[in-house]
Amino acid sequence: MNPAIRLDDLTVCYNRHPAVHHLSGAFHHGSLTAIVGPNGAGKSTLLKAIMGLLPVTTGRIDPAALTPTDIAYLPQQAQIDRQFPITVLDVVLLGHWQRVGVLGAVTPPLKTQAIEALAAVELADFQRRPIRTLSAGQFQRVLFARMLLQDARLILLDEPFTAIDARTTADLIELVRAWHDQQRTVIAVLHDLDQVRAHFPETLLMARSRIAWGQTAQVLTAENLRQARQMAEAWDEQARLCAVQAP
Amino acid sequence: MNLLLEWLVAPFVEFSFMRRALVACLALGLGCGPVGVLLMLRRMSLMGDALSHAVLPGAAIGFLIAGFSLTAMSLGGFVAGLTVALLAGLVTRFTEQREDASFAAFYLISLALGVLIVSTRGSSVDLLHVLFGTILAVDDASLFLVASIASVSLLTLALIYRPLIVECFDSGFLQSVQARGTVYHLMFLILVVLNLVAGFQALGTLMAVGLMMLPAAAARFWAQEVWSMAAVAATIAVLSGYIGLLLSYHHDLPSGPAIILTAGMAYLLSIVLGAQDGLLVRLLPRPHLQA
Image 1 (tube, chains in turn purple, cyan):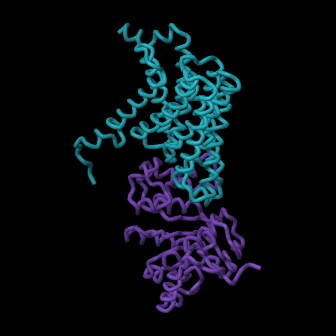
Image 2 (cartoon, helix red, strand yellow):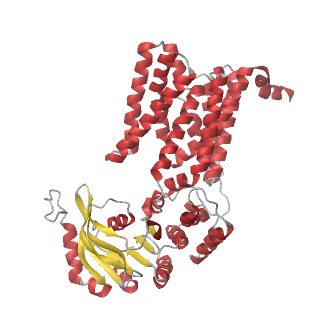
Image 3 (cartoon, chains in turn purple, brown):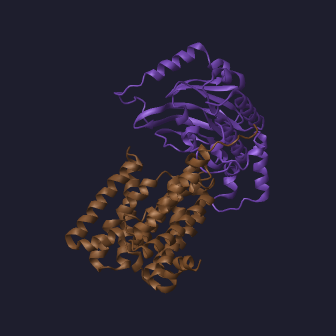
């Protein structure tokens, strides 16, 4: 199995406090991995670091054969202005960014693809709707349609199913499984452990550091989960310097 | 009928200063409307206000060096406005302070400095000039400046329209496709300062931002997409200029406040009558549609 992304003793800090601490391992090419851990465990931080949105403090992220344009990233919904005056179709068309960029024209075939992507998330009739009229679930479908167009080899999802209804979650998980079948690498931050056990073959359980990483059934044991909770609670305002520093 | 036509047209046929003022308003409105819409959508409405005050010391220094010279005052205003925008941006980026607080801090410093400069060296008439502008005394040079700024604004907005919109709607996405949001943000800030400098010629530093924000705020009640919102805002801005000039001429009112109050009326009417979420639409009982 080829690694798609290799983490090599990775530490990412906010104000010198590590959010991700000496994390090593690899997401394999074509794997479908859930990242699980308590609040403040550094899950979102890890995704942002992989995207290059946060500076790496020590260690490194080896993207192997991937270039930044091969990666699609779905941040948590709270970061998007859902009142913004823009239509559903325009949001989906953003998925063509790598092809059209700042000034390129949206050609009819590109537009057709966008309409097809909307149909794939069951929002075929929603093209002209302003996004502020959509429910949270419908809007998440729109963002998934945009990712369909991005056609990325590595897909990062940050809590994609939080505050989303069951029916939509089920539909979107089908899309994730389809990506997996197409040999794309998918990494998702999730909270629902039953969901992880049902649909994600591999899991990274972390609490700033790695607790366990591998096949889901072997990672999500009671003992590992208890350990993750304990480590997350151990946030120390007066923390001393970490003994393991970069050479 | 003839009387009405005369009321609407005669001042501009008769007096060249009114014609100039009208053209200046047209150019101002075309630039300020769309810029204001984007400023509003970026939740920076009040920062436009802050920047307009920040222009003052630059204009004052220009005024002290070269007298009532358009070039010197505009250049000074532009430099001062941009300095405040950049300093506030830097502080926001490199400290924990939020953008609104850092903008407020720097514009207050700038405003106080401006008032100090003008009051120690000039007379209070000069100060009034800078604060309230003189659209009826627009000469060819300032007309040229205002028109150039409007053209540059519209062209630049057209070029950076896509990333600018993505940056305010979903900045995370722009980052994720490796586009440089900061560059477009900076270009946009330059446009805001440019338009404020254009506006301060005609309307004064206190009210320049009025023709930017009021039409934009009104447009939100009429349009559902950014481009249509910008078109509505530009139209409202241009009409406010025209009607404001007429009112100021016929009723002997100062032109700046007359124009801004007209835009204010358009805003209030839009709140009530607006097709998108206006009060009337909200309050009138209308039968609901099929599910």
